[in-house]
Image 1 (cartoon, rainbow, N blue to C red):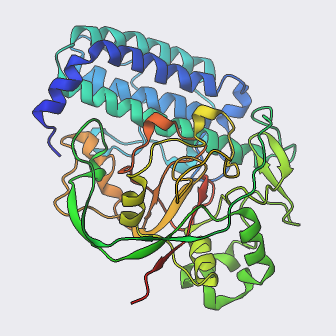
Image 2: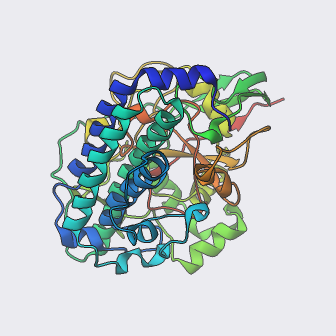
Length: 427
């Protein structure tokens, strides 16, 4: 993917804003870990989970590796060993410590990681000031800030799994009171088909996997007016959903048996309670069900005589709405029931839960990854994963847009993952 000259010029013209954004995003990571003790920050419960300390170090590594070492002529690495320890998957710049073993890194100490961050932040601010007209560098920094926002979400979902796994079930944050609403009836809204355009239009920042904008043929379809709720999912369970093989994809049915699935991750055995970042609470019947795999979402959809939406259907509907919802900005740290002020025929596009789609994660026609090592950011993962859309209660609102494509393996459950239903229009 080659950046357009207008975008590069725009990025260069906003260098002062870039320094401000850099400080804001970097501070947000520290704020999210402020209530944690060092002992909390070194635990890895499953291979998908990374310790909080590693997230703080890796996001710093990104700026050191791709900005300071590439563009800072006199910069020396803070610690050469960190370049190996905190690389994630960028083989083009070197080898890395194995992902499943990040929880074994008792050293460097947590305070040393904070020193690393402070050292790199100081050097980055000097670099930004010295390269005010460098659009290419400004883009890499902007990419790094969006990358750090992704890790801020991972930090929250990972510490949730760490605290859930601990028999003491500590709380990450005090619970904030939020009104429990009453979901409107689940209805299907007719959406038109035709030859329509999806993908990023080139205005402002985007990840390379959102490009290029292209035409798709979309059938007329019916789109769920809201997310599937806890109460509806509990009905699926009580109707034997986890015992009926006819509802399940083969790989999903294997997971039901091998992993003992019979309810969403973090639900209690009686289906009445759920573990949250503020500890255990009763399940809100009207809130979106979350922490379910794509296999579970697909089985529910089949049980409900529906299907999961395609990502193009989701994007076209979401593009007609404003990016507003239960995102990290609200600091509720958990999906909530539909608010009374919600307007329009379709709700809950933004925040609450990432929405599983029926679309495998693959390249758009004509896709080209970013040039250089950062080209490993997205393209290399375009196999065996499923597109999710819309963000969650742990995603910042300014990180989202209708074209944003994230992705997870269909068995993943530790993220805030939920779904809505769709149906193909009768012919």
